[in-house]
Image (tube, rainbow, N blue to C red; front, top):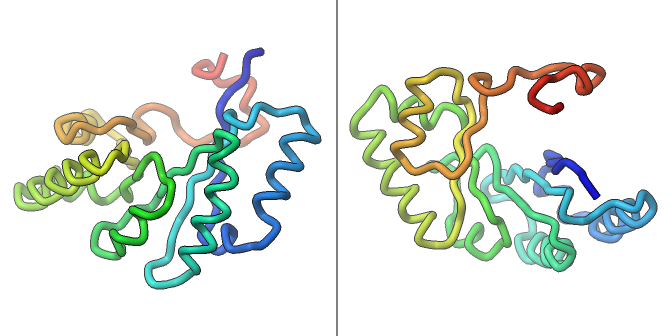
Length: 168
C-alpha cells in the first residue's frame, strides 16, 4: 500500500493532554492508517511543561512507530537534559541558525560542535530555512541529515496539493 508521510506541528502542551495518545490512535484506527505514516513536529517552550508526562505520551505513540521531531530548535534556549529524555529522532534547527553560520566563522564552528554532539547522542539533524545554494552548502558541510526550505518547495495552498509536480 502506497502512502506519503505526514508531519503535524504541535506544541509540547498538547503532549500533556491526558487523552492525546488515545485520540491519535483512535483516529489512526478509524481511518485505517498506517501509524508510521504519521509524525509530529514538536515545539517546546523552554522551562515550560511536564517533561515526564510528555515522555509518557510520546512513549505510547512511539510504540506504534510514530516518529517525533523537535522543531524550531534554538540552541540558546534549551535544556539538553530534558530533550535527551524525550524520544525525538530528529532535531530541526530554527531557520536563522544556518544563516548565522554562513555569516560568521565563530557561529559556524559552534553550530558544528553542537551538531556533532547531537549526532553522538543518536539524533538526526535537520536545518530549515534553506532558501538558496549558499545555505544548502553550509548545511551540507555541517552534515545535515535533512534540509527544508524554499530552495526545494515553496509553500502552497492545500487545495493545490494534487498539482504539485514534486508530489506526483
